[in-house]
Amino acid sequence: MYTIVDYKHLGGLTHEMSIEAKQLARKAQAGQFLIIRMNDEGERIPLTIADADPDKGTITIVFQAIGRSTEELATYKVGDTLSDVVGPLGRASEIEKYGKVIIVGGGVGIAPIYPIAKALKAAGNHVISIIGAKNKDLLFWEDRMAAVSNELHIATDDGSCGHKGFVTDILDDICQKEEIAAVWAVGPMIMMKNCVRVTKPYGIKTFVSMNPVMIDGTGMCGGCRIQVGDETKFACVDGPEFDGHLVDFDLAMKRSAYLKDMEAKGREYYHD
Ligand code: FES
Image 1 (cartoon, rainbow, N blue to C red):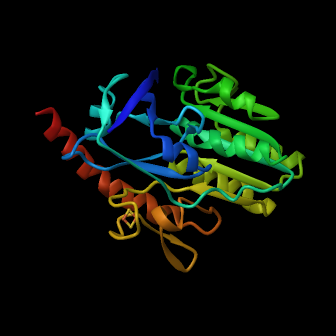
Image 2: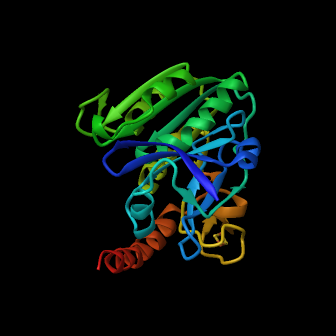
Image 3: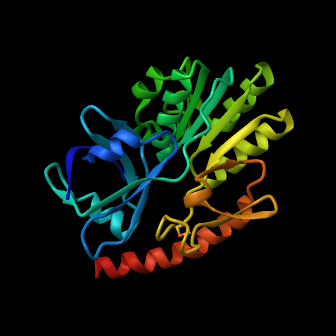
């Protein structure tokens, strides 16, 4: 059993939880994820590891309560236990000394981008972070991101904090003015697609973290397949990070729209 040791409501549908998981906390690397099951009959929920504290033996997750299982998870409080926390899964981010790098996190994608920024800064890179949300109430972890960035830029759709507009506006502006070695983008699929569109003309290597529906998380079911260049890849074992310039975002978005319908049915069932 894995005990929840800390909980915060971050605003809107977004929740932060720290869970005692000693081995996982020792092994977790930036970019990796885990799978949670609340109880023996529970659905498997894949979530990126947003932070890990090997000394305390805890890992932190951030999730949105938008499906049947995540809504139920949001009702769990400090002291409650989860029956399974499996990980770390997936390949770690390619952390090395690149020079000047840009990190882009949109919406709940701010959480998974945090450990990547932290690791890149620790590796000696100049980290420029751009985070964005619909409005300032949906932003979170500005202080954490500032602590692991040389520069922090904020964008909100309604202009209630930072630049009024999209993270891609700021990304484009910086790419025009500065020599950027690599970009990481994590957030909604459409945001990552647009980040890649911005960086392509500059020829900047751009990593994106794909979050398709996952079932087993170990390469067995094929549910998380995505098209990367000429190859079909499984996000759970080959990723979740891929070269954004090669990802077929249109196909990935089509698949995820189809599965959203099934998700909605599951939610209705849960509420009945
Ligand atoms: Fe089953 Fe990736 S989740 S193959």
